[in-house]
Image (tube, rainbow, N blue to C red; front, side, top):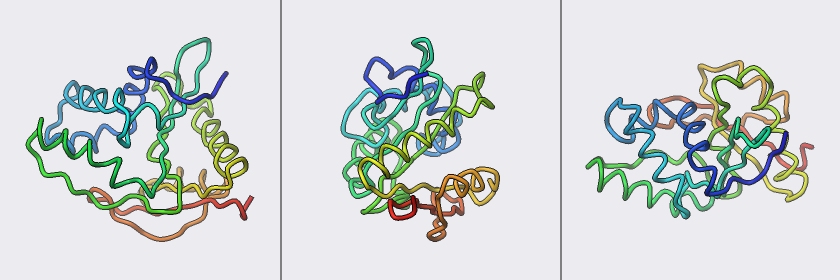
Length: 188
């Protein structure tokens, strides 16, 4: 099992994983519940650099050459810059205004999502990627990691707490109430 930075050649597998974690929010972005359109939308962004969903903001977990899971992470201070191409695509292709709340902020690397292929869930792969991110960003780079967890998902919150994440504040994102959690180098 190998965890490495995502590459353009991984775009299809990354898109497949991300859609598992982001299906509902992607439908909100494009304005309709259409799995094919949602996949196409995400795939367009995953293949491009310079946006928050780009392959170059991912880590992938692969086994025997197959991507089984991915994590999407970027510098929270660059959110507005990284969001501009997403907003442009949504306005031009789907004719929808795009102005969601800020899910992250300056001073943290934001874990936008972690996704594991359906047939690989229950193997602890999400936890393996989280542990890798903690090692890479907290231990090696001395950065703060942040994430949002849905208040309706106490199981995920307990996992994050067990790994060292702490509650910072509440946030609303895309109509959902979330807990903003962080882990800092001083806490390791």
